[in-house]
Image (tube, rainbow, N blue to C red; front, side):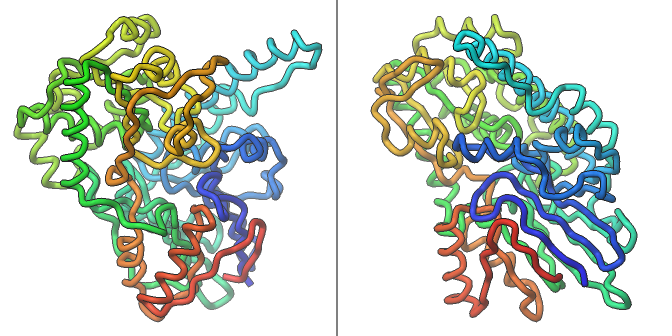
Length: 467
């Protein structure tokens, strides 16, 4: 019989990874994500893979975020040389994200080794190198949405629009089991139907087994218009207070959403700030990829951009200033008020946002806006949970800035959207909840039982089931 092993993003949000083995011996890895957040979780990235990388026939990726792709260079370093299938836009975004991740791995290992040397400890090696990431990029195989393709003997994959970020896909996988076909559908990260730019997730009707993400399985997001009104009010208050606005943002997806919304505010006369800084080299490059794929945007948003002759995302917001160079980024720190600063990383685990914290977080006139989920163990989560002081760049800083969390900006489906999407399947396939913290999964499990009379399972890490 065909088997499915739950290897990552099981009762947690990051590190997505599942292994599918057919009766005929085909082995396909679905996702190869980086674990992010608490130190013990990140430590799991260095553990050996729970399978032989050389035995894999193919890897299938739903979208480019590192919690779904971030261990691909490690897989390559372990000897895997087979194809890596993803949508065309995901293949482009993977280049951006994996090379950046490899650079960070090398830089962090070098920096940590210097500190260890002073303590008489041996140096550490990076999790993977830029060379490993470059090898991964040679293994990419782009597939169009809706096109069925045999990725390994007896295993056929079709990508469908997931609406999460550019190129994100729901993965439909048909596995031959002697004379029967078993159909597995993996939701990937399902998009919030209120998000700008992206099309709504495709609904599917047939499956034998469904893996459903549950990042926000315990709640619905706020109404989009209410969230935008709240953001506009925050920007007005920050203008009156005379401080800057800091927005930690994921470079791919969230940043493009924010630029779209701020551009709308600008055109409506609701943006009091005089400058918006995009201080993220990765996000700047991601904007260029998004601009090339405007044909995949939601038709209404695409028409709005076209009405303003916005061939590039940046054209939609005329006061946007991109700061790719380090000296450009450092110059922002001389600005004491009137600026909106969008920078990575989205959960404040590194990147340029922490440098802006050093200059703004302790100032009561400043405002800090979290537009998305903050995982347990991250600096962003500590601030959201009310920490009065935090450690940033080896310094202890007071959290005096006004902190705001805008749940309505999530690029993930909320509970009702998850229920609606999965309700389209006929004949109640086996349902497993993945990619969520345990309490979120349990809330979604209860909602599925109460509202759809559907029993969903929560797998254990490493659990193996028959497909």
